[in-house]
Image 1 (cartoon, rainbow, N blue to C red):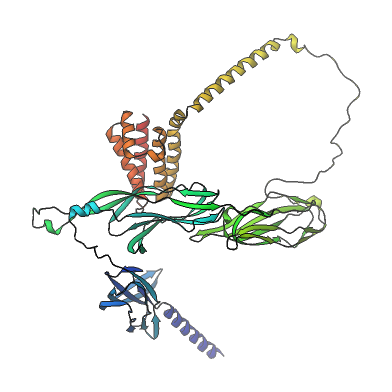
Image 2: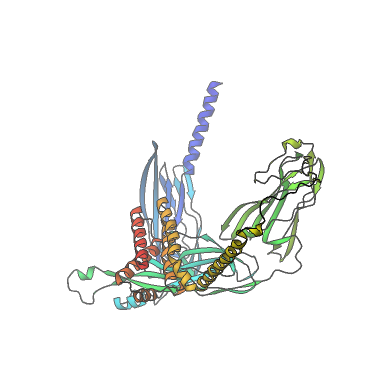
Length: 601
């Protein structure tokens, strides 16, 4: 029996090792998703494995593609040691240089390869080929190249829907498109405010990555900047304001006449600033149809509901709760609790709401739990009316009502002395008669004169005088307060340093925690908000020329203005740059404090 057990265990371990090794073998393909017909590109098949040998590679037929070169084979091996466990992985790639022969969708069939004793296949991929730009050559002088830099930049704000009803989710996507220009960074990014919408940021990449896209028959490199989920809160045509961004372009420059034999081999680059903005987007929002049931609380989307008690049976004076769970997709973030009617013998407490919601590219989905705590004060069998929840179904265009059905709860006899106390801190108990709440009024008079009358004392004259003086002081204080509040410009100027100090303390907190992006975001808000309040200018009018002219008009020197702009540039660049060390953050923080202090002086 022991020998048979060992044999079976050995076979199981051998099969497990073989399956583990097989699970590590794979064949992948790397190819651009969008190309032009005059573009030469590469198709790379990569076989990854930990053991065995790669043989019998079979490429696809390359229908619709012209193979110019290949396959070129290369092999790489990596070694990794973690906690004494050594792992070796290898890969072998097969590279083809190809060109599209026609426009349209080209499907690249799977390739196959044998790794050890296993045959692995790649997944089929689709390539979109568009007509090439015959005029898009590389012939341009340095001066013409500098003049055309940034002309291929485009900032687009798109929405998933333009005709919706109130509360229907809309996904807004902001992307930057570029063809040939070289982008070295960004600054002065201004995102839309989305007035008229409840908005939630669902995608905000820290590192901007470009991928190929087809736009109007042209191949662009597109980068996602922001993605939002919008819930319209009013009817009519709502216009989303344009977004703006300043791109730092790296433009190659070469001398017109070489002064040295080496001048023709080396190029220099200059940085140009190009401001691009998106077009405004209009969303038409229609009101919800009339005739909504009384149980409708504003839900729009597709939902399901369940309701149940926290226990099947409970004793009198013990705590329990009724849980209503609503799940689905739509404006689940803004759902209100359905109406619940508990029996009069149930002592109810404040409703508690718990959310488990995720927002993605298709909108918000998840569930919301509404919990209604209560304490039954009498035994018996209690039936609760069905809980109803009505929502507007976008797909069918009508209201749907969900019902929990009748709910029943049995309450057994309980001990009033051990009545439950709710964790909310509010303890509601039945009224207990103590027998000493009201005392009888004595009918025997015991009245006698004690002391002097108030009219015979000096206080009778001091009290009115003090009251008059106090009233006059309060009136003067109210007049001064009203005068200061009416002076909006002065109030904004006086609170500029206070608001900046609050934001600087928040930035210092982020710096101590090592939160790079949050630190520079808060530092930028502190400086921009301070300048806006100090100079009494709206944020939209805070151009560099306006700031410089206003500060110089108030007697500030050029070095201070230049230092202010350097810190603002550092904050803008840091949003799209890798995380820096704490020394850089500390330096920028001290410079910001110094600049604000010198402007205040």
